[in-house]
Length: 160
Image (cartoon, rainbow, N blue to C red; front, top):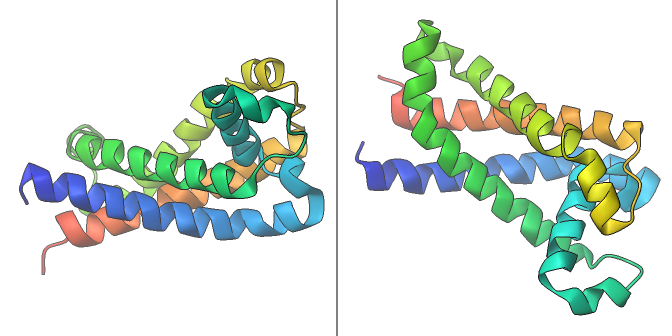
């Protein structure tokens, strides 16, 4: 495929994987509220920092938080689509390893943003990200990466 089509499919795959990820997070949200979903808390902090007037609002705007969440899924999908050939080259595994590469990518995103950035987001947003929310984030990021790897492999790299 061409680079333009790879980027386009990476964004579509990232969006679809983010939707699946969000569906996995819904039970955590229903039971614990936004405090049960670390990514949503992190996205709320980012959105509130972009628009300072929302800081006075005690409850996050769920629509803006979810829009931010899905847009980050698109961005991460584009990055994954661009890096995927490199991952395959260095993994020296069959193309089916895309599922595992995606899973590792999802866990890597969790480590980079939710786990490592936890204290920063807590401080900036004056929130508390619980271990339960981090565990839910690890599960949902793993699902995101797995679905992303599957979609990228099916469209770009699978050969009939």
